[in-house]
Length: 418
Image 1: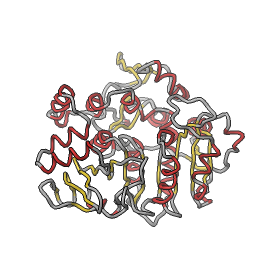
Image 2: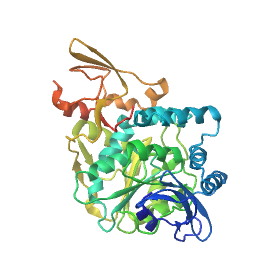
Image 3: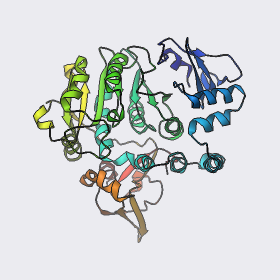
Image 4: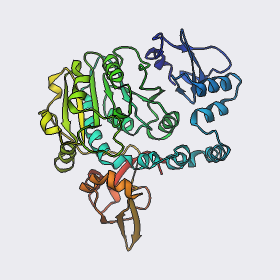
């Protein structure tokens, strides 16, 4: 945890500033806090592996006790949810592999359900394709009065990585705060997908642990319908983004359409009403995806009517008091590689006679049904000249690597992703 983060944090319960407690739990290297305890006027919160946990429950109290007793490993295992001996032993063995540890291997231990599959293939699913395009065109237009943005309920940092990649090509540095209620997701993000982020573990069903007007942009993708206190969260997003803030919410499940794992859905009109102070516009997800895939554009110039949205299973909300935000954008191809260029893990690769034959294989029938829209850009089979079984140098390909990346056949993945 970078100590600069303390300036942004507030207790979610009493609203006062938090500060580091000077006790045996505190370990830091320069401006980075590895472990410690944060205190406010009402509560105490643990910091483990650089991740502040702004939650008070039996788990966090147990972690604080372990930290103050000098047992960092027990605090880590407690927050990671590795309470059974078998999983804890497996995870410790993985940590001993050092630089050989991969995101996939750690995820298989830490995630006990189908969400792990979702994360592995996240970089090419249809909701990510649309959200990534939105962030690439909108992030440069966030308010210049703050150097921070928030990826709320951001999981293990896939969209945070997109934002950080955008910033690597800009002269103005904007730091992304990645917030999620699950500690292990943030743990993975800080080690693999988004190592430059400021992680914060917090519960979006409670007031957000941030000062007013902190963020120039707040992103919340996919997760809003799974929050019970939606009115509270909407008000909090407006509070922390301020009057000049930009709110971007891709893939909101609609109560008027059918969705897999729909959550606590609302009608399009109800979503718009929650963010009325920020002048929200609603857009059709299927149309946004088609525009990105077929035309490489994001068209925010015309709001879709409520009547047109009534049959849509999901929609995107963009809220800003700046009218110039709502226009048509061209989505430019990304030429550079920030991680490792590899074949999309949805493909089985067979190399023979100087060619790589790629075959699309979904991890499950359920995955194929939920994310079937990816067939708009992922072919069932494709043959590419060259060896694509390992990390790829775009200059060595006999085929247009830009087109392969545009269609998500090749992905710019974080190092040691799988």
